[in-house]
Amino acid sequence: YQNFITWFGHLAKGEPFTALAYLSIALVVITVLKNGFRFLAMNFMVLIRNRSIQEIRQNVYQRCLDLPIAFFNNERKGDLMSRMSNDVKEIEFALMVSLEALYFQPLNIILFMVALVMLSAKLTLYILLFLPITALIIGLIGRSLRKRSTRNQELLGKVMTAYDETLGGIRIIKAFNAAGFFSQKYKEQDEAYTRNNIGVQRRYDLASPMSETIGIGVSALLLWLGGSMVFRNELDPEFFLTYFAIFSQLIPPFKAFSNALYAAQKGIASLDRIQELVTAPVTVEDPIVAEVPVFNNNIVLKNVGFGYLDGAKVIDGFDLEIKKGQTIALVGPSGAGKTTLTDLLARFYDVTDGGILLDGVDIRKFKQDDLRRLIGIVNQENILFNETVRNNIALGMPKTPLEAVIDAAKAANAHEFIMEMDHGYDTEIGERGGKLSGGQKQRLAIARALLKDPEILILDEATSALDSNSEKAVQQALEKLMSSKTSIIIAHRLSTVIHADVIIVLDKGKMIEKGTHNELLEQKGMYFNLIQLQQLLSN
Ligand SMILES: Nc1ncnc2c1ncn2[C@@H]1O[C@H](COP(=O)(O)OP(=O)(O)OP(=O)(O)O)[C@@H](O)[C@H]1O
Ligand SMILES: [Mg+2]
Image (cartoon, rainbow, N blue to C red; front, side, top):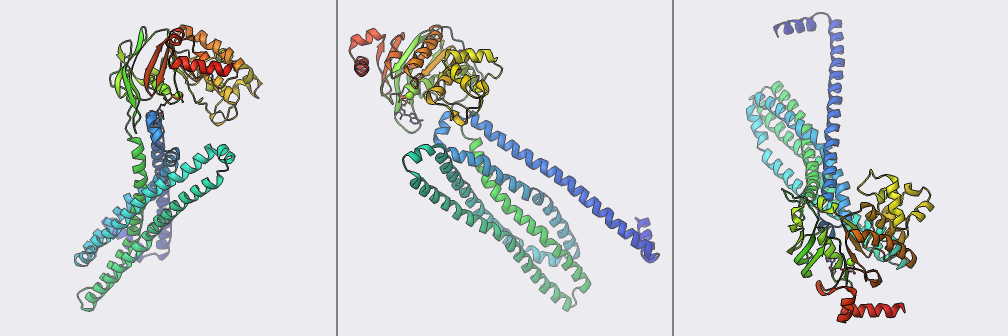
């Protein structure tokens, strides 16, 4: 250190040119170092920012896959989309603005404060008296900012929902001339969002002028107090100037810090919404210690009762034994609870009363994946994905050889129309299979179930969209599969269920008749009436 002082003394006193040269070099070296490290720091920040955001996104996505179906009945899709896009963006912005400032500015502020205290503890104390007031103002604005930001994200979710619904139903909106209605509804939601957003941005814009005003206010006070001390000869003027110069260095970090606080508040509002999604309760849970499902004997539904979240029982006191290999048909009026019953079997929902036993073991003791591996479903809605025909049929089984896919498609009477498509099995079928006809979608869904070759087959109106010829062909393939499997078929067209081992008539969630086709005809009850009605219609 002593050496350095001597050397510096020489430098300053002696050769002016050497001094100048050293100074210039020092300037360059310092700048290169500063910017080099700054670049490194930013590199690191970019990494932190992107990787943390990625983790949030992936958590949200994974969570959506884990959440039970009931969750999605109650949430609006647009809002979920908005959380994934807008809220995540807000968090990213907050991270970008505040990460650096919230870590480094306090350090800056503390260093300057230490210098100020060392120069004059008394003056510094005066300044510190303003701290609580400043903190209060910043806190109040921050809180209101956070509340409004939460509301903002909710409103944006509604806007996105309106947009999503419109895109999904565009054909019906046009057909029913409902564009005016939807346009009005959209405008209202957009207006509410825009107003709230203006409020948020105004508060946010308040941050910078506010902190600058506070800073200058404190400076003026300092000038007055310190100046008076100088005039009273209590303070050395040079000393005061130094003090004031250092103090003025405090304002930019203070401003950056309070700006960062506001950005963080907005980010936290969004983070709360993400948190809400990630911590939403999983009502259909896998057990901690799971048993492995075996199906050798039977499925027993014991006094099964179920109601959706919001109301009355949809299934009530339902008892049934399904022996392995049997074909069970569920018939009954629309809204009777047929689909619900099969949903319970696959644990899309858990029963609220009673239990469902597979070979004597309650199905809640299995992992959902293990249970569903046994079950193949063709639904009332034939859900297809924006993928190739091949991947849609071999869903969840990406390694299936093409030959097997083709066999399944042939059995489902789908091979022919697939081959007529531009790229055959490699044709992309558009979002939700939008490029296909209703019957074509249904045949792909059947091919999917045939390929899975499950132990338990659930066919919910599986052939309802087919013309009589293709229905006959598909029905044959299905019957071949059903003869060796356990199956549950739901159909309004009763001609497809007459061969079932057991036919169950369901009405308002209760089993009211049970037997074979002939037995039920003799009972002359609801089934008999339905059959008569349909025969009348077809004659
Ligand atoms: N997600 C849901 N939330 C609340 N209630 C529902 C839900 N899904 C169905 N329901 C109600 O449960 C009852 C049974 O519906 P379900 O879909 O099981 O009838 P279904 O017998 O399959 O009728 P369909 O023959 O028309 O398909 C209906 O009254 C319906 O309104
Ligand atoms: Mg149904």
